[in-house]
Length: 158
Image 1 (tube, helix red, strand yellow):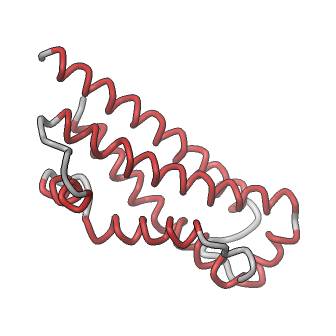
Image 2 (tube, helix red, strand yellow):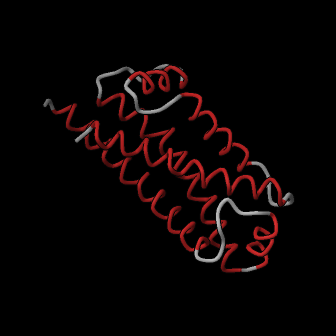
């Protein structure tokens, strides 16, 4: 392996470690809520979560860590994987996603769903319980896909 390849491999590992950290904390927050509530949660349970300082903190942690995870993967990890693979990353993001799909790392449509959810979170959702509930339940569903993506990248750079 050349020096560039080793540098790119280290960058992938660094970005993977950061991504796994966010995922782990996201999963821990879900675990804390799951000791009291079953996911997907219903609106009545969501209102109980919002009324509890402790449970609301877990809910906020989930949303924060999901956003950080999506940002890290989209802004750093995906490009570092392609650099490691010897690919050019000076291209539109859709082309980067398509290349990752070709090497069986992601599904482009699924990533757009994740990105759209991240964008929805960036807007003010706190005044609408149904939107916030949907965000939590969707993150719960998507965290498995995010872990599978990270695991696929981890296998690629072993």
